[in-house]
Length: 284
View 1 (tube, rainbow, N blue to C red):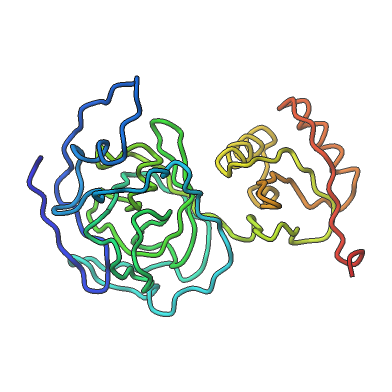
View 2: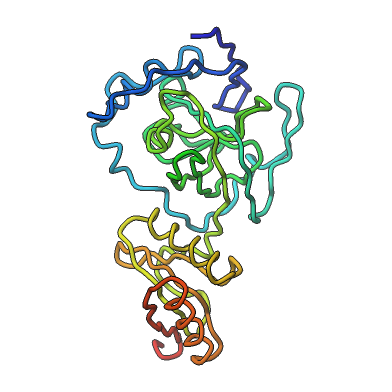
């Protein structure tokens, strides 16, 4: 492994990886390696790495569920790290960037993140230099298409070639523990489009195109819809209702408009969407 230097920024849990991690030997396709085996030969921070006894069910750890949260009072102020000034976003807005993702593990497990919360390497969280704290992002590995949803609650990484630092579990689920880094796409998630209470934000008619137990499958369909129907992101959303992630388009001002899009969904995606009406007055 190459020699790696770490620099700890006061009040920031993440550190800087100044040299790229070592490559790892490919594992046998016959048997999926354990999380520890996947990371043991990979690149990570000096004195960092996987825990001695990671939980056995990391594949079952659910993605972070986006929800509305007040922004942290202090974690979104401008700050200086390694001579560079960073100005975090102070409002939630669309963000999409591609670059290298790294991960951090046992060295910081239990220590305070920039949000003041203890870092849990087995939770679905991440560190980012400028995205609001707290906020949510979808991270997709460009080489495999695998994606996860994480909660941003920490700052870093600060090396110019790194875009985001994922938790141990998030990196495991994307499959790059062993290599230490991977090229990813990071996209912010608007909690207003991901209503964990399962309630439509506006009255009107919606099209429901699918319902999935896994958020990843729902978001894949969401992306297909946006491409096939050339829809603006504000017209689509994923709603969590009774453990199912429901993919919806709308609201529509009139049922006729919804029926027209229903026909387009059937023609272009061979899917049968159903009409869902939301009227709070009817429920009062």
